[in-house]
Amino acid sequence: MKQRASFFQRLSSTQIVYLVALVTLILGVLLVNSIGRSFFSPGNISSILTGTSVLGFIAIGQTLVILAGSLDLSVPYVTSLASLIAAGVMANNPNNVLSGVLLTLGTAAVIGLANGLIVARLNVHGFIATLGVGLIISGFLATNFKGSFGETPLAFRLVGATGIGPVPISTIIMLACAGLAGLLLHRTRVGHHLYAVGGDIAVARTSGIRVDVPVITAHVICSVLAGMAGLLLASRLGVGSPTVGSQGGYDLLSIAAVVLGGTLLSGGKGTITGTLGGVLIFAMLDNIMSVMQVNPFLKDVVRGVVIVVAVAVYARRRIVSRPERFPAKGSVETPAAQPVPVEGP
Image (cartoon, rainbow, N blue to C red; front, side, top):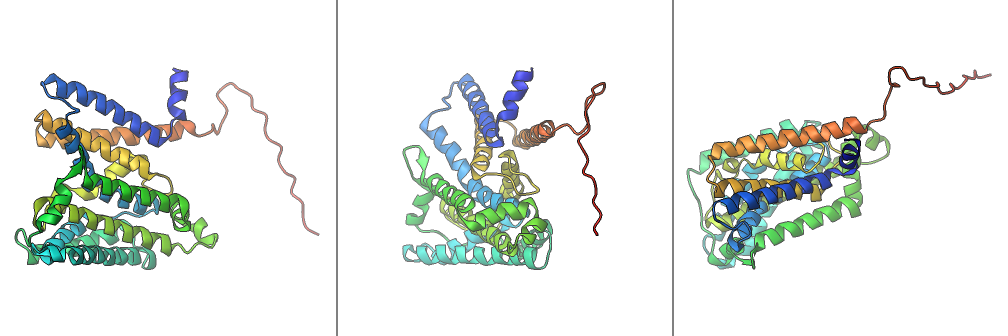
C-alpha cells in the first residue's frame, strides 16, 4: 500500500487527470461496444472532439482568470451576445464575415476590460464583479431578443461543419488558442506575474509587480475566448441565439473543467494542459452517456460526482504531502537549537 500511495503522490495533477481520461476512454470503449457500436468510429471521434471545442475555448480563458485568483461568471452571456453580433452583422453576406468576427471579438474584449477594471481597480471580487456584468448582459439580451437573430453565410458555417479527417477545424483552432495561452503563461512576464498574483497578491505587490495588469489581461483574454465560442456556436447553428450560452451552462462547467484539470480555485497553481484534460473527460462522459441514451438529468449527477471526487483527491494529496508538524506518539524528537537573542548596544 505504501508503494502504491507513493506512486500516486509522485504524480502531478496534470498526470492524474490524463490517467483519469485514459480510464474514461477504456470505460467508454467497453460500454459503447457492449451495445454494438464502435467508440473509435470517425463519427464518434468527431463528435467527442466537437464537444471539446466550445467548452475548451471558455475553459482556457477561465484558467487564466482563476490562476490570477479571480473568476468569470459572465462567460455564458458573452458567448450568447457574441453569437448574436456575429449573425446580425454577417446577415448571410460572405463579405461581412471579417467585420462580423472583428466586431464580435472587439465587443467581447471591451466586456473583459470592464470585468478586469472592476476587479483590479475597484477591488471587487471576481465572483461578484462578473456576476453583475453577466446579469447586465443577460437583461439586455432578454429585453431586446426573443428568439434567434441574424444568419451566418455558408462560408462561415463551414468552419463549424468541416474538419481534417475526424478532427473538426474548430478543435484545431481551439488547440492553437491553448498553445498560445500556454506560451503566455510560461514564456512571458505577464504569465509569470499571473502565477505570482494568484499565489499571493500581497507578496506580488511587495515584489514590485503591477498586480492590476495580469488580472485585467486575464479577464480580457477570457472574454475574447468566450467570444470565440460564440462565433463557433453561430457557425454551427447558422443564427445567433440569446440563450445558447446560458443553456450550455458554460460558466460552471468551465470552472469544473479547470478544477478537474488540477488548477487551484484560490489561484497560483495550474496548467492549460490540465484544463484540456478536464475538458476531454467531460466531452467523453457526455458522449458515452448520449450513446447509451442515459437520462439527461443523470449527466449532471455524473459530472458532480467526478468533480467532487477529483477535488477530494487533490486535497488529500496536498494534506499527505505536507511535512509532519509534530512527531509521532512515543517518538523522541531532538529540539532544534534556538538562536540566542542579542540585545543591541
